[in-house]
Amino acid sequence: MLGETGPEWLSEEVKTGTTIIAIEYNGGVVLGSDSRVSAGASVVNRVMNKLSPLHDKIYCALSGSAADAQTIAEIVNYQLDVHSIEIGEDPQVRSAATLVRNISYKYKEELSAHLIVAGWDRREGGQVFATLNGLLTRQPFAVGGSGSSYVYGFVDAEYRKGMSKEECQQFVANTLSLAMSRDGSSGGVAYIVTIDEQSTEEKVILGNDLPTFFDQ
Amino acid sequence: MMQSLEPQAGGFNFNNCSRNSVLESGLSELGFKPPTARKTGTTIAGVVYKDGVILGADTRATDDMVVADKNCMKIHYIAPKIYCCGAGVAADAEITTQIMASNVELHMLNTGRPPLVAMVTRQLKQMLFRYQGHVGSSLIVGGVDVTGPHLYSVYPHGSYDKLPFLTMGSGAAAAVSVFEDRFKPKMELEEAKQLVRDAIAAGIFCDLGSGSNVDLCVITEGGVDFLRGYDKPTEKGQRGGQYRYKPGTTPVLTKTVTPLTLDVVDESVQTMEST
Image 1 (cartoon, each protein chain N blue to C red):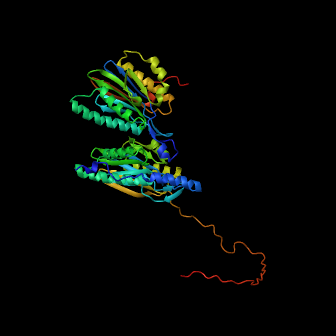
Image 2 (spheres, rainbow over the protein chains, first blue to last red):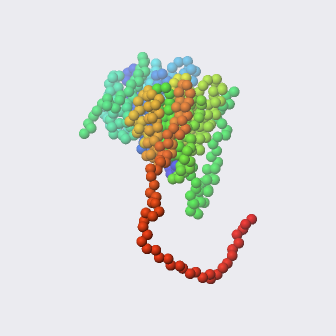
Image 3 (cartoon, helix red, strand yellow):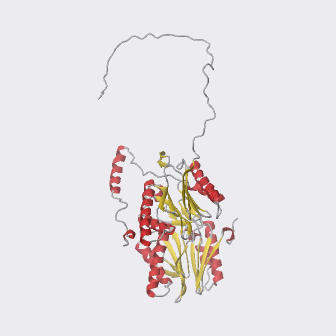
């Protein structure tokens, strides 16, 4: 659809060209994202928070086309609100992920966004779901976005089962920092959200506070 | 009585697209180029300051490489204290903001409340997303509502950003560099006006698609101050002197007159249509 050359505003779609990650630990989840939004070669927003709340204890991480991802998150937020009123209690993370997956699958030809859904609920504790291309799969951790390609090796090597909350937060910060330094479409600051039974905590790590690695 | 909130049956009509594609293929055989939509090739900017929001825009509208309008208005009214700068395709930005203004007025009457900037942004982005980027308007929505001053940008495909300062259009890169250097939170009015003026001027001088004057719109809790033609940095200056030489400056040394005798060979009369 966007293959033919037309006016620039048609082809210069705003993408979140991103790095997103979510990881589960015993008692909760940690989500992380970078903050760069690009349109062509321009950065249009260098401080966007791509961790979007779907409910009090369920967040999703946005990647791909900014318009598509924002719209899916907004629609699912509304549907979850209705659903939680209907069942009279807080929704399950699996329900939120299913709603995201339903939209991603039904409109998979038209949409170009990937949302990672993660949160905490009473029945199953912390959970992470990937919804790429309309599948629904629960994973111990998930990475996504253009920057994820650069850190698959790192996360596969460094992940251990049974990490604590602080270790997970450090893992997320390290992963984001590595991806942001290698991927041109990721950058800015790192947003980290930690969800557990007691609270939902949002944190920002500014540029020079990010963990540093080999950099010549 | 929620008619205003239902999707309108009117609005944009894309029936002519098939006609255009047939015409295009026919015309290109004969070597003609079809007319393109006029873009505003713009610099628009917005800033949140201590008491509210300041929106700024240049005033040049271009048709490819020709200036179609030297003093067009790119800051559009949406609600008494919410205004919108438009970039991208001129017609789309104009009509989209008019549709929004009308929807907002109906919403105000339905709910009995003054509108929120977030509401305007949400309606805008939902409409633009529905048209999947074919409505080519990039907009900066700024205003003051009961929750305070807010500034949003909305892109043609339907994504939005909420930031304390924003620029859009072809001159956005030039303007945002001024903001990145000098923006501070909670600026005073005069400082903020100067900052927005400088950002638009950067677009006017450094971007070919932007030019002419700077329009500003200052929105506060107390009301709106629309400063059309706030600054005219490209106005022609006063000429300091003249290069005209006085008659007699160059002395005449010699003068030779050679008359040319011409004979009449042929005389013909052609009458003009004088009705």
